[in-house]
Image (cartoon, rainbow, N blue to C red; front, top):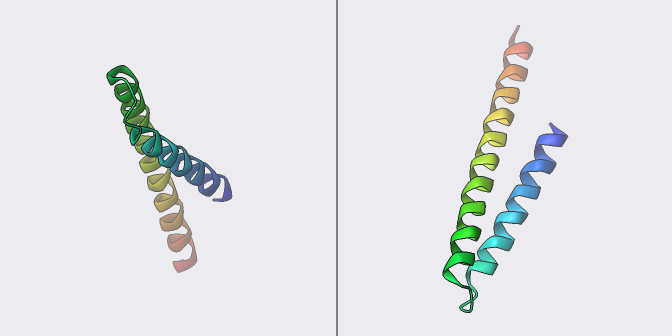
Length: 66
């Protein structure tokens, strides 16, 4: 679970950096699109990590109920 948490936090930090970069008024359209594309990818990866964590918690709960 620790690995999932660290990876999730890393993804969130990268998303935060991209958001700050997107606030730059001097970005070209090409740069903006590239940052957006990277952000969408990171969000998907973060959601996948959340789903894995949710499944792990469910498994733990099921094991403790037995």
